[in-house]
Amino acid sequence: MTESKRTAVVTGAARGIGAAIAQRLASDGMAIAAIDLDEASCATTVEAIIGAGGSAIAIGADVGDEAAVGVAIERVAAELGGPTVLVNNAGIIRDNLLFKMSVADWDDVMSVHLRGAFLMTRAVQRFMVDAKFGRIVNMSSSSAQGNRGQANYSAAKAGLQGFTKTLAIELGRYGVTANAIAPGFIETDMTRATAARLRMDFEELKSQLVSQIPVGRAGRPEDIAALAAFLVSEDAGFVSGQVIYAAGGPLD
Image (cartoon, rainbow, N blue to C red):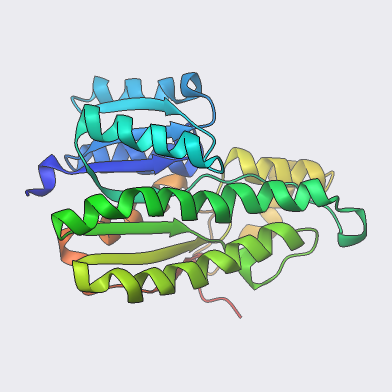
């Protein structure tokens, strides 16, 4: 199977990092299944891919719902071919200090990040095993190291790192690699929401954070897309079980 004929599933593809990854992989010749909670929200991503001459479909699915994931992946296989590239990017935040955090806030974040990555990967891995080729990229975060007001998000992102390493061990013999990307500060709707939670002007927060980043700028969704593009490529076949921090410098 040539790379130009591969099908990639990207979750959380409506905007931000997910949209950037979907468009980058499409430009590399892959057919893209852009998945988000609401199918219509992926229209912009899909239109951009098709407008550039690529192939893509939008699918609405709750990645934390087992039945919905099954239906979504069967549709991908029927319309685009069996998926052999998976980017688990879907995520939400329900930030709060621990004593204010509700059980629902905890469960919702775990459902999307951890349960969602598990369900999507379980549904897709059989196509990868059959093809003797697969690439899985899980989106972690620098918050996996701990971040005030994000006990749920930090735990989920740290959990994804352990999940990734186990996938690498279990699936490596089938030609499948699994890696995690842990972005630092990236300019997205989610980081703007964090600024709002902190009751800070986004540009003020950005200025504070950039002052601590060695490369002297905030990250862009395209930075993460470029790294994902390498990890899902043929050239990355000997890179597996890794967590790559894309944060503009080393983290403590």
